[in-house]
Amino acid sequence: VTTDAPRGIVSTPAIPTVASHWVFPEVRRFDGGRLEVAVFNPGTTTAVFDLTIGYENPDRFPQPEAIEVRVRPGRETLVDLTDNADAVAGVGLSIDLQRTS
Image (cartoon, rainbow, N blue to C red):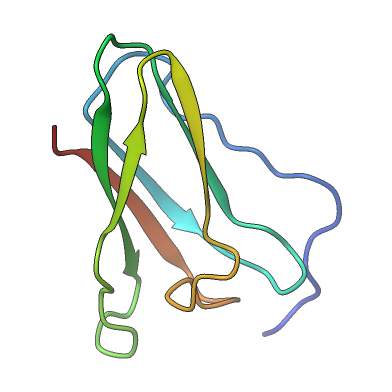
């Protein structure tokens, strides 16, 4: 069943505490909508993360390469996945963000 994209803004806060690994299950990108992940680094050194997209049906949609995300100390970085060909519109996916250094 295909339905229209939701109207308005949908925001899902993660864990508001320092961590090195976050998983956002059951994410969906809709045509006409934006898919963005904001990452804040409260530390004193640059943090490097791998952002990986995974699908409910990996046989149909193989896992793409990880996206490297660098966040300077005391800063926030916004990762916009809207135009990323790996974030297929209308298909359930998960976002995994793992700190690598």
